[in-house]
Length: 161
Image 1 (cartoon, rainbow, N blue to C red):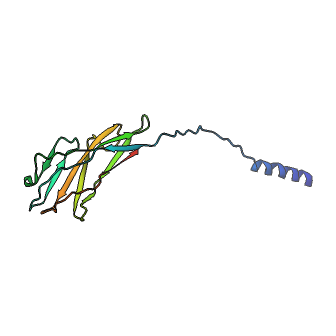
Image 2: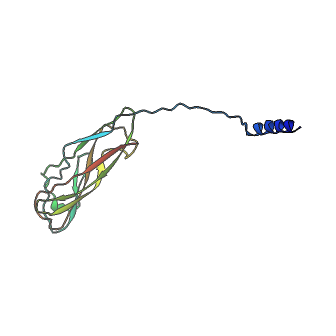
Image 3: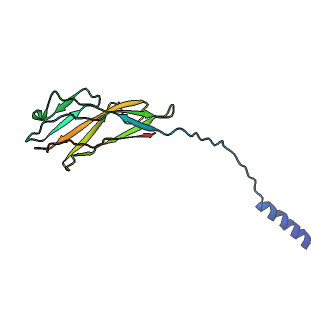
């Protein structure tokens, strides 16, 4: 009887630990695409601006078609201005977003002006497929701004979305 009880106990114990199992699989995929890159040509050149006792802004539209002054005493109408063109290289079918930032322009002597309100000729800042675009912005000119040649940078960053 002890053997029968032992066998019966062993049978039930084995069944208690036995479990049915199932597994499934899924395909795993990955695609490596070429890195996004951006190059520029030309410069954001505000041209010549007359010194004045009152501060003002000089604005170049992103298309490069107009330069406006909110202080008309600073305007030198015969001075030329330009905008840079940025070219984006990306993987086929990929979309990107763009961010911009201005800079402090500075003379060799340390005098400064600020570039801000950077605009692009793009219709949006995300979901973009354009291969090139141009950039404009606003230059803040101080009252009695020191004379000289000011230089700085405008930064344009593109990232895959």
